[in-house]
Image (tube, helix red, strand yellow):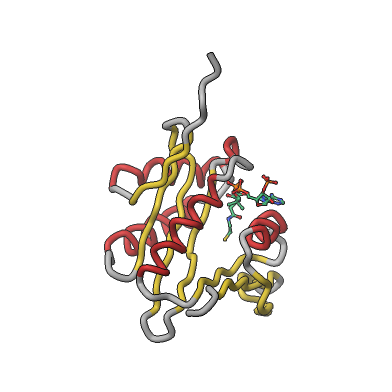
Length: 159
Ligand SMILES: CC(C)(COP(=O)(O)OP(=O)(O)OC[C@H]1O[C@@H](n2cnc3c(N)ncnc32)[C@H](O)[C@@H]1OP(=O)(O)O)[C@@H](O)C(=O)NCCC(=O)NCCS
């Protein structure tokens, strides 16, 4: 009998730090950036009013996470981190994580979501476009002296 794949998305819990670090190691991040990302995850998971971290499991294996922050002052939200394990890409995992983050933002009364990524990150740029995000602006030297950032924005209709 054919077995069905399962994809679940849930709130972050402390025992997922190591799984997140493992994915970031596998995609080649250096230790100081991993530590910075884990500190950010801790902050977003602790402020349970205006931010969230969601994790995904594919066939019960930890497969990725997203962190999102809601800003009361303009009712927009920012995706701070979104990573899917390289061995589990193109299975709709990031789409499900973004969908969960957007659901949180809408429940908070949000108007939309934006996210920054390096201009060279063609995979992420194509991914955000596929989720209805539109390129908004280029920020010169945002990531480094020779690496511009690009912001994608999705505004929810009628909000
Ligand atoms: C970008 C990323 C999060 C996408 O994760 P994913 O789980 O593979 O994405 P999904 O399966 O939900 O993709 C949905 C659609 O987005 C588009 N897409 C996703 N990755 C893509 C890529 N590398 N190139 C082109 N299009 C892509 C496709 O249209 C895809 O649908 P398809 O698989 O039917 O072709 C993942 O590649 C990743 O972790 N990259 C490294 C970290 C990163 O760049 N994070 C975002 C920076 S803010």
